[in-house]
Length: 67
Image (cartoon, rainbow, N blue to C red):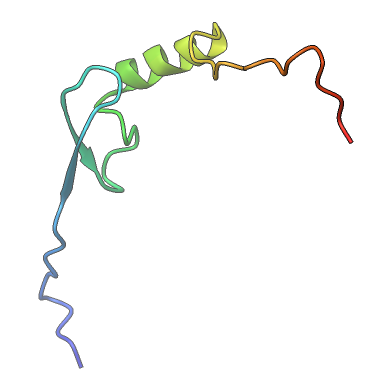
């Protein structure tokens, strides 16, 4: 049996915040993960809402006939 008074060391994963490029802890202790803060999370959400992130679409040629 394990002793409940012993703590298990779990390695902490450090990632780069996708918004500001700063250091962010990627763990359950960070409610904003993968962002470093609520501010960075809100900035990213605002960018999605204003459609700043988009996948470029390539239109098929005009003579393309689907089968």
